Image (cartoon, rainbow, N blue to C red; front, side, top):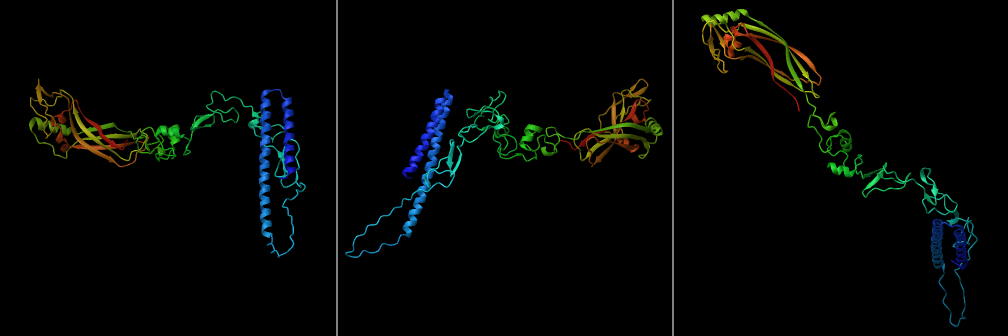
Length: 428
């Protein structure tokens, strides 16, 4: 850089210094004084950086010119003996030309300055970049505050962050930062969410889930959904251990199971009175015993099946049992004759038939199983299902092998009892 360029830069600096001094003299507030001093230093530093960049560019260009001239220089001729010495002068200094652009900094061309409050950048007069949060004056490039906030002394005049906010990011309120490892989202401090499932990493650590995996247990529900929505276990694919994984379970915290109820109603018994008379004659007078296929009674009933649960069952099994029940003190036979319950090959506990005055009775209530029908239904019964099955059974004399003939022969205080037992179905 020649002396004229240096003098030009010094002149620019002096002009800026005098201008800033005028600002200093006109201001009386200490805060404004500090801002103006800072502006002065910023402008000087900005111009120094621009000068250094221009000088570096000029030096690089000059080096290119020198290298080119060296390559084009021809070899010197050999001097002849007794030749007269000659003197040559050369100069690589090139005079600067007039600036052809909007402005020049005196490096490649003569200095051409911009107007007040403008800087020359790449041969163009431009505003000086705003070094503050906002600039709404002519000294710097225009820079507004967001969301219509007022710019006061180069600072966006935001309202304080409300107390009920965990944090403020500075867009509409003054900044209130979160602790380390957390960031502000919607006025709440949350930690990083590595897997993007909506559940912060610190929360996932508390629940034992994988912070790098959206669905830790692979049940089809995200960790966030299980923790914040369904309340199921995000580390167990089947929280309630029923038939369904949590992703397919409408009630992931409640066991879905079938609840089958089987009941008997509308029982109708038709007794063969002739058989009862034949049994009495057999017991009292040792007459002919009835044949095995002799019909004793006909029993009809309805069996209702209901699923009151929240899940289906794939099968249903139960025993439809027919028993004969007699109460205590039954008048079994008129003659003082002792019969025990082993009569008829029974395997139950023996109860003696004793004499009371002129009749024979049982000492306590007795029940004899006559017939058991095993019902097996391999069919699906959905929740809310209800159906009825009509049952028909015939009791013959051979079915009485496990009961007492004397009780069957009696007509008083004895009846047939129908029950459903051993109900089994698919449940959890």
